[in-house]
Length: 273
Image 1: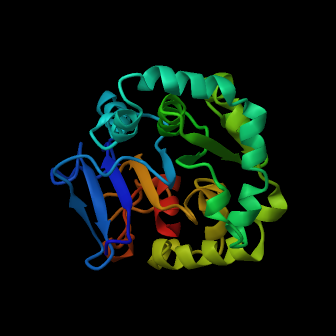
Image 2: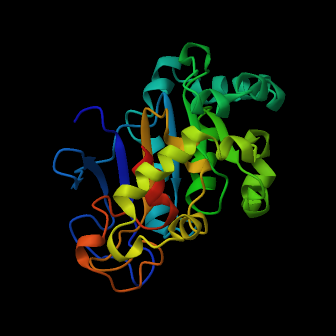
């Protein structure tokens, strides 16, 4: 149980999302034994190590504050305390000496190493955030990672840069790591895709074209973000009971709603983790 570090901020999101007072507007942790969300009384542990920060493309002000709060709590300040009162200056000097090209060298081939199980953590400069450069959660996690001198990698598959946010393109493009289609279609990723589908595409939703339908809502690059992550922080919304996982709107047998009920492509990232 202690090994599962999947943290979810329920922003409730679209009108059709589930509105559960127990989780809405709060951080929760996934309990792998009971397969339920357990609301937390305070923020999750501050991001550290190799972690993923992803989620909805539209954030409420409370969700944006929740992301920023992860980096501003007592745990996040521990590094500053170690540097003493001059920490902000020290961090700024550190940032000035780290060219984007240097970061690129340190993360070269990262996607392949993650997929094929060849990642050597001792050679990574941590903390490191893995994300996707989209509007909303991705760009906000990225902004906070840069501000706190965490390494940052935005995985982008073919065509994904077109959908990257303006903020990410302007201030985080040094962290863009393009992933070839061949890697995203590799047997390892495809098998993980099918395994996740066994838990997410249930009952009447399991039509012959379900893989194509999932491809329209979830990107395989999400697998890269979470496969080797020490912790995963997601911001999103929950599926209403009796609603399909493709749109969140269509009526289905309530027993066909996935237990890990985060909606949209973010839900697939959670399932892969």
